Each structure stands twice: as C-alpha cells, then as structure tokens.
Image 1 (cartoon, rainbow, N blue to C red):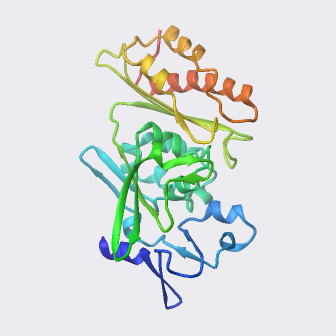
Image 2: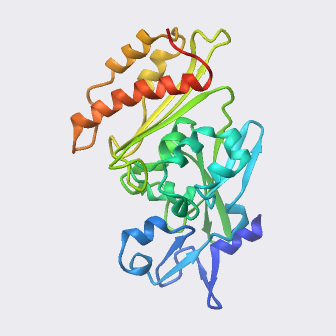
Image 3: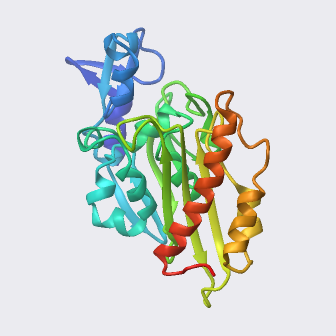
Length: 294
C-alpha cells in the first residue's frame, strides 16, 4: 500500500518526477475520470501545465467490506454500483443513485472521488453518502512522510465547489457503515431523467422496528437546495420512534422548515419538490422492506 501511495505522491511524467508537496514549479491537475474537469473548461486540464492520471493506482480502486463497514476507493466508477455484487448488496442506495447518473458511457468513466472533489451542490452521490454518515479518507505528503486524514463527509464539503482538501491532498477512499434491513430510495429532478444536472436530489434510508409498526431509524439528505447537501435532522428525529402511518408521513411533509432552501433561484419550486420527494422517498423506502403505511 505504501509503495502505491508513493507512486501518486511522486508522479512520473515523461521520465520526470513531480512531487505533490508544492515544490514543483508548474501546475497540474489530478484526474481519474475527468468528466467534470473536461466539461468545465474548453482548454485542456483547466489551464494547468499537466494532468496526472491516478486511475491505475490500485489502492485508490479498493472495494472492501470489513467489520460492518465498506470502503470504496476514489477510483471506483459509477457504473460499478450497478454491476458489482458487493456494492449492490452493501450500499443499495448508491445503486439507486447510479441508475439516474448520466448514461452508461459517462458512468464507465466518472468516479466516486471526482464526484466528491467537485463538490457540486447537486452531485448525485453526495446525498446518499451523507445519509450513510460517510467518512472521506485523504492523503498528502508532508516533507518525507505520508499523512492520512479521515474527515466526515458533512465536514468535507464546504460549499459550492469547495472542500476541506488542502494543496496536494488527494481523496483515497470513502467509508460508510453497511446498513442492513433498511429500505432506501433516491429521488432526482432535472430537465430530464438523466444526462442532466440535478435541480434537486435526495436520498432516503428507513429502518422499521421488529414489529414493522414503528420507525427505528430514518436518514434523509437533500442536495440542490443550498451551497452544500444537507441532512433533514429535525424530520429524522421526529419520525424515529413514531408509528409508521400515512398521517405521520404527511405531518412531516407539512412541517418542513420554511428556511430550508438556501438557493437564491426558484425557491418556492424547490420547497414544493422537497415536500413531494419527502412523501415519495419515505413511501418507496418502506415499500422496499415490504411495509405499506396505513
């Protein structure tokens, strides 16, 4: 593992070695899929002198389940959530999100790390990972040492296009708990079903108690309603421990905080979408675990 991390921290291009510690005089981008980067600028590499492709680094492509958690490498392609049995079984909500993500050609290139590092307010992977309390693992070089950091996703995203990454720091992987016996759903609205940027997106995870009559755990995250995706903590807490019923779900849909939308544009529209998604997302999540609210 150490050797492959060294490979990225000292990248070789055309026989020359470029350290990632800021001592190299020229600028470069770090890419794996590059779908956001190449779409963002007409000029190659976002105006940088070079680009370093990390897609062949094995430690950035890891998929490993251990002790109730799954670690997903930054190089993991979005299409893998629709094909890899381990990912389908352990993080099904990401399968739902991936099914709405662009088209297969883009999904075969776009990566988990890129979706997080881009920090779009409506990035499709962030609400599901946020709902799962994901942790982002990063690496950087400090003199001759390799420093690794673990950052909760809720602290990693700082705003539109902003993350906690420092200069030379790279996302290696993301870890989240394997949530068993949860129903899940992903909702998204844009100009069309896919091949478009989401206007609003959301992820839902619901677990019932042993009797299937009460909410045991509820996790709800929304993107596209402010500078960064958010959890609906108040609604989650109000649902936990309460009876699963149509009346309870409708009550929560009517109690959405009035200031929840931080976006400047189409605020009333986004509020309506949140209400509709909350209803649909909870019903669909419950249906996955064979519960129909009365």
